[in-house]
Image 1 (cartoon, rainbow, N blue to C red):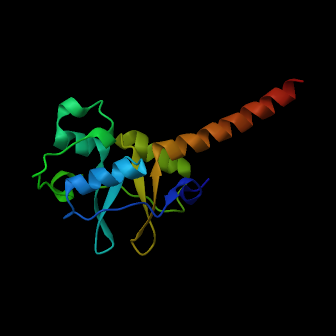
Image 2 (cartoon, rainbow, N blue to C red; image 1 turned 90 degrees about the horizontal axis):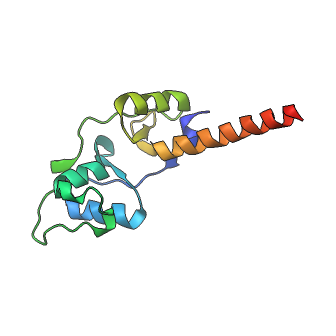
Length: 148
């Protein structure tokens, strides 16, 4: 299976000069855990819910992202807290390669970048697990039918 078959196409993105509060609002409203950071359509980083929690404080570890509050006068930007070196993958890579990268790098998502360098999708651990579960169920179903 290829990455393009499991990825979420056209993910929400932010720019590095957007406020952290704006990014948190997007994550909470859309129910997402990571935002690719783009400048001139090129990926320059990724902001994860882990990055947000580091910014807001360790006591927020178990707080749902929609309940995180920044001080009204907070001026922190996405660029202040994003992870600048981001691992990406192409849409035609095998899903097993993406899963290996995620496991080795201990990351929860991979932005999917097309041939022109544009972010065309995002692949999360949840996406990979969903496909793995479907494959395992199919395999187990064929095993059960062989026993009869």
